[in-house]
Image (cartoon, rainbow, N blue to C red; front, top):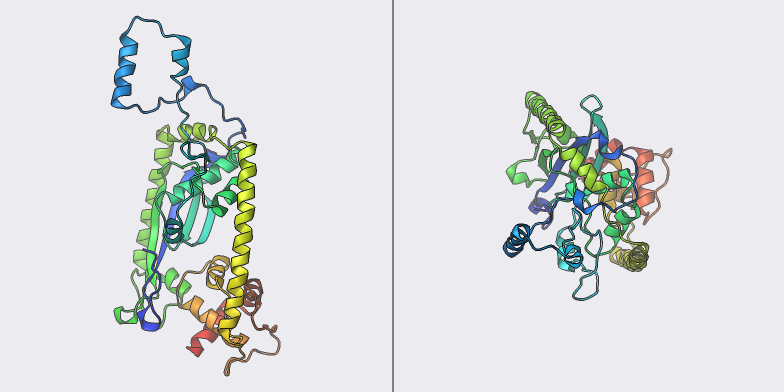
Length: 372
């Protein structure tokens, strides 16, 4: 589940933190760029057939009757990828994802990193988020690999995120994907505050009296197990033909033509304009809700804070926000030192992030803890 908070104070539900990895051979993005998506049908795998289709194919193969050219044209084999974006043949319109689906399938990604692994033979891609949807990571990695290989325009990634229509992005193989760790923060105090390991305890600023599930020996054993999994992943990449098959499929990504891209750009511009208008209304509503008080923080600031400083949900984020809100309102007991920059009331997300960096995360976190 999302781990969405319900209620306030002691009634807060746990925030789930998931940390996943995907490892792939470094060749995945090292091939020559190719803008062509045309391939010979003979080089592609046969499309699945129904029982009737299989029977018809078998009958044709056993018949001595020659096959006419017109009939051969009907035997076109679909490439392994679908079109990235296509209209519904029955309506002539793009298929849109229902609003209720979008509402419940949005997860926050707090951290994504890419680094060489296994003596430089592989890339280790780490993703940390609130929760992961089915095939989400495989789609993210597959799309990034297609962009790196030069067969998918980077623009399509922004378009896919901006407009609510179905897009079929390239899917990376499952080999190499595993969940590295998980944990919960902001647990109900009646159940006992907990963190998975010391690193997570530090990131979430585990309160005094909380407990860590894995001690140093347990953490080292978990890391050793992860390394053994990585070694097995490398072996599978080398011994199977999955990498070569995937690279071939990446070269066959069916990118929309320019006419479709123009339509998508127009739809994205309209969507962005509506979102900007909605956010402006939200900002005005926030100001009215504050009733003249200047200690409110803008929406989405917590997410921006976690993404910019590689934090996870927990007391550290809450304490930093508490300190910033108090400084905005010049609360008693929270007067800033004269050498520190001023923080104006109703500061924007960008201004708050810049101010946080100038003062320091740890200082604000400790200051916020003292105000709780």
